[in-house]
Amino acid sequence: MDETKTEQDNILNDPNLGEIFQLAVINSKPPKREKFDWANFKPQAVKSAEDLPSYLVFGPLNHGTLIINADGFNAEWSDPEQKAKIVLNWNSKTHKYTASQVWDGEEGSATQQDDTTPLIQVFAMLYEDGFPKNWDAKAKEQFEGKYYLTWLEGNERLPTYFAAPDGVFRVISFPVMIKNLRHARTILEHISAETPNYGFFATATLMQQDVYYKLGTAPDWTRDIAMCMTQSIGETGLIPQDIPRTEEIEGAQWNHLVRDAMMLHVFVPFAGMRDMLQKLSESPMPIIERTDAPIRRDLLPVVSPQGLPEKLNSFTLDDTIQGIRVTYTFLAPEIALDDLLTLDSNSQIDRLEKFSDAILDQLSADVEEAKRKAEEKPRIVTE
Image (cartoon, rainbow, N blue to C red; front, side, top):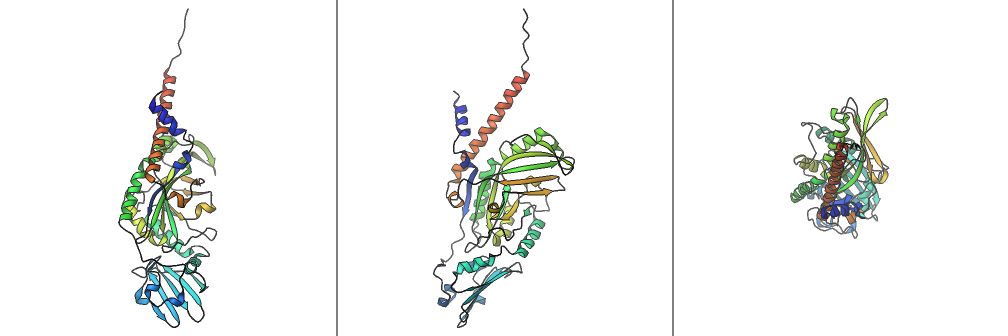
């Protein structure tokens, strides 16, 4: 038997095939900072700046505004321009913490807690009712105004996770061709080497895309079934689940393509989002400023709350100008995120590339076989 064929069969029939569609790309740790003992923090013990976290969410502890006296203390952690900050006040008489936050000059939520509350929980309570809606709205306006992307705003139903010291994360997601995953990782490694003020990590997972091309509005090539299939394979490295089907939706005709795609998810602290988007826009990643040509809806990056997959199985985005509608469906993860980030991405990407090669080789062989059969002429036997 052909050894290549045997290897191909082994790849396609791997019982652990599901593992390769969920992989770690990078786990970039934040820069080294002074360790802080969150668990044993006591406000009464604060006598100097060294007794407080050196960094929190938007920046370092602002020594110039720090007040410590018999009444308690007032501390803030801010960016250099002081347009974003978290403020913490402790009142020794009332035994209360008061915490508040500002981003881009916009006040966010505030909370008051007893000083028996663990300090990290005090900051987490800033998001008890979800992410500040005015921040989300302003971020959407700013980032969609600068880049071709969609910013999904959260709501109170979505879980909001606060991680010390970097705060709440957002996720930048977009489809990546399997053969480009290594290059994507290299780009993210380069960004990590520049030592941003925050940690970030990235995964790649399989998602289903139901792509609808509106006939007469979407690009002309989307009318051609063969072109749709070829284009999709070239963009994903995977074979669509079926050929496009024409459907009538809301009185219009649409070509409906169902495909799987590896989605790259870059998890970034909200406080670092502006910096990360800028860095990605300066790379070959598909974060494109609006001064350039637009991106198709089905390839457009989406920025979403970290907890979105926990509450939604899918979501739909529509571009009426392009005539393209996309439904994204989350597939159930086989590996927990914490475990995923410990795996060797080189090995995972290697297996995924071999799988992509195997299915595309099989497709080519099937096409050639179909052509051969079609070209065979029936023999006429005469006596």
